[in-house]
Image (cartoon, rainbow, N blue to C red; front, side, top):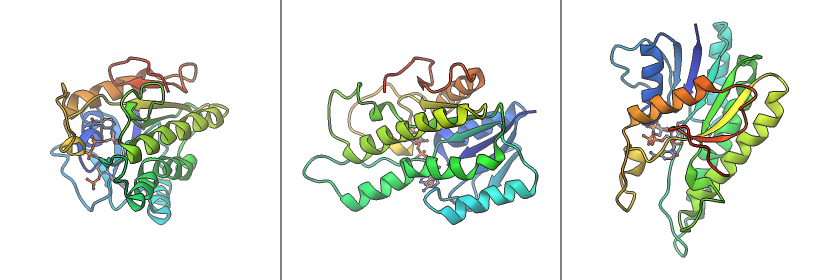
Length: 226
Ligand SMILES: NC(=O)c1ccc[n+]([C@@H]2O[C@H](COP(=O)([O-])OP(=O)(O)OC[C@H]3O[C@@H](n4cnc5c(N)ncnc54)[C@H](OP(=O)(O)O)[C@@H]3O)[C@@H](O)[C@H]2O)c1
């Protein structure tokens, strides 16, 4: 039986991942920032009030799992936010806040969770193609681009360090997904549903091995450039 920890699962893509994993029979722990969320009939254990910017909240989550003897086979770090800023109107307090969630958040959470992981465990970090240096042909979105580019570095660094312990790390882009995150995003896109993104991301983590670790993948399987 596979045990998964899904971080940022109040709603959106992460909620759908937790639901789909539970529906197929995995043991699922869903870390949410709020106090509750609705997993309908799914058998998901909710870990409430896990704000990834809080060391106390994250270490409390890990302590709870350790006390129950939980070992995590697959950790999905999905929590994230997106600010729509542009040159001349950058709010640096907000940029710093976004870094705390999108960049420091996965590092803090995964580092704290190391006692839960073991040889053969996998870690998936949902960053974003918007954080790709090579794919940036349009500019703008300073806070989001910077925080997600640095999140890719967090993941690649973790890959090098954790591979030695037999733990596979992969960075993931979900696609353009119709969630609250993009409700004010300008332009027309062929959005996929959060359920479709979740199915693809689960497949990417299912197929991940130590040999294929350390890369950056679209939920549809496409290899992405950094
Ligand atoms: N949607 C897209 O097209 C798209 C594209 C590329 C990448 N992504 C990435 O995919 C991830 C999920 O996004 P989504 O589209 O599913 O957005 P979403 O529906 O807005 O979900 C974001 C989730 O992150 C949680 N969260 C925010 N701040 C947090 C914090 N400090 N601590 C813990 N959890 C926190 C939210 O909790 P609350 O509900 O309590 O705020 C929510 O559950 C994000 O990392 C995003 O950058 C999304």
